[in-house]
Structures are given as structure tokens and as C-alpha cells.
Image (cartoon, rainbow, N blue to C red; front, side, top):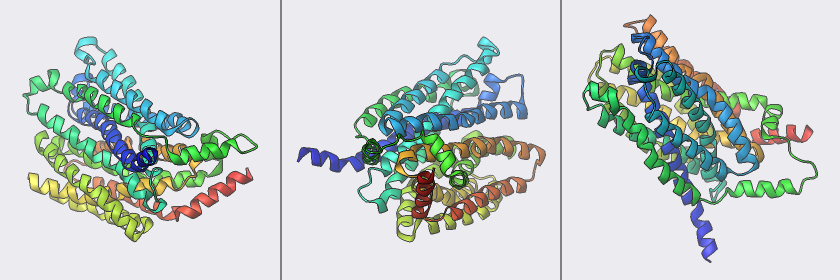
Length: 441
């Protein structure tokens, strides 16, 4: 009886662990993004002032995205071959440790060129850790679901960690940006990074309390009964369904690139090109993040009622038009108008992001699911997520006083995801097609 009770509690425990773990991981990632937009240009690239300093700092942000596919491959292999739980514990420890080290890193004024070099190296390790985190968290929550029909809803708790991590990072930066500029540049920016040590301990304890995924255990048992050894998960994904992988990459673009457009690029845009104070945009993003936090489970619930594909198609379509509303309101310059503008974009984009994880995870069979969804998500992040703030900054610099090129960029992001998610079709047909090609191989 005691064992059954423990097993019965596992879906809730797994969802909670996925939420808390991804909240910590994304907190670490977002404080880097915020610091890159606000201070890293001055502290680590002082010779590149203004536009070029910001571009250099955001370039280190992009480097983390380029490292994420490697993390997806490494930890996808561990998660598919050795276990989801082991992979997730390793990524959490890596991420927390690196974030604390960034908080202790000397600046250019202290050690010269070694400061940006070490920052980039730590950023690469951080990107590798995040690359393995997301897929495992989604699977641990979704695969513990007591009912396959509820898998998208349970998987959304991993997505819930993203706005929660952003809220926590915004609160921390709101505290330290209240300092005068001298104190903020001297030591204030380090506080959010060092606080990660506390979160690391909490997340580690919670993750250890969750059992291994039942889907993974069943798959390992089935593999043990097969006559021939299974190929490496990466080889199975690349040879078995390259078109499926490409569509999964495209389907993730809106949730990744769109998010970094509103939550990273908009910090630089509003403070450097719209003449707003950093306190105003951080207050705006805090309110919008709280809104997204509540949108996430609601969107997952609605999608379970109306159908995932229909819901994703509708929200991606709406996102094509939201940037024009956003920039019109942002140009008015008040906290209320900026919050409403960014909120409109995040409303539909956040709803899409809540559902896409469960939808894409059903694209791949259990044996290669961790590798498949991690590679798709992280390739999408590397190609589109890391480059979006950079491209936005270049457009803003070359079209000063005009926001329409930025709105077109956001529309293109939304259109790409709309087309990709529609082409993916229903989950059953996608998995069936993959398994058939795998058997033929």
C-alpha cells in the first residue's frame, strides 16, 4: 500500500520537480540575458562603446545558444540510454555552479582580455547545461502522466518554469537596479548570480525525490528483449526522420525566438532607442511574466479541450499580427502602454509556448524522445533564439526611429512556426511514420 501511494504521488511530484528545476535553470539563463543587455558591455567590453558594446555583450548571449545543441545531444544520449533522472541532476548542478562562477568573475578592468574570454567559456558550459535540461524536464513531467491524453498538460509544468524563472530574475534585478550606478556596476549585478547557489541546493533535493520515468523503464525492458542492439539515439533521429526533426525545429521558433525578442531585445531597444529608463522596462517585463505564469496552465488546459493542433495554429496565427500593436503602444512611452503592448504579444506567444512542448514530444518514440525533442528545441534556439536579439539590435541601429522592420521580424518568426506546426500533423501519424522508417533501416 505504501508503495502504491508513493507511485500515485509521482505525477504531481514529477510535475513539481520539472517546474522548480526549470525555474532555476531559466532563472540562471535570464539573469545572464538581463545582465548582457544592461551591464556586460561596459564591464567586459569597455573598448566597444555604445552600439558595439551592446552587440558584443549580446554576442556572448548568443554563444550560449550555439552550445545548446551540443548539450541536447550529450544529455539526450544520457537520458535515452542511462536515465532521464541522472541527466537532469547533472544539468542542474552544472548550471548552478557556472552561474555562481559568473557572479565571481573579475571584469576587464581587473584582468583585461581574460575577463571576456572566461565569460564566453562559462557561457558555453551554461549553454550545454540548458541544452540538456529542457527536454528532460518536459519528459519527466509528461511521461509520469497517468493518462496519455493529459500528457500535454503535465508537460506544461516544465514550461511554467520559464516565466517563473523570469519573474524571479526580474525581482532580483529590480532590487539591485535600485542601487546607484556606481554600486550597481561595482557589485550589485553580481548578487542575482550568487543567489543561484541557494536555488541550486533546493532544486537538487527536489530532483532526487522523483522516480525514474515509467516510459523510460518500460522502453529499457523492451530493448533488453530485442535481438539486435539499438543504434545511438542521435543516429536514429538523423537517419530515421530528418524532415520530422526540421519541422520540430521550426515549430519551436515562436516560443524561443519570440520570447527572447520580447524579454531580451526589448530591454536594449527601449533603453537605447526609445529613451526609456531600465526601471520602466524591467517593471513592465515583471508584470508580463506574471501574466504568462498564469497563462501557461490555462493554455494547456484549453488546448486539451479544443485540440493541440487547432490551439497552436490559432495562437501562432494571432502572433503574426501582435507586434504591430506592441510597437504602437510601446512608442507611447508610459509604463501602462508598454506593459499592454508587450503583454499582447506575450499573451498569444506564451499560450503557444505552453502547449508546444507536449505536442513536439509526441513526435518521437520513447527510445529516442529525449534526444529528438532536445535536438529540435536547441537547434531552434541556436539558429533563431540567440540570433534574434542580435538581428533586432542591427535593425534598430540601421532603421532608427522606425519600428516596422522589427515588427516584420517578429511576424516572420510567427509565420515560420505556424507553417511548421501545421505540417507536423497529428502525433499518432508522426510517430507511426518514424517507427516504420526505423524498422526498414
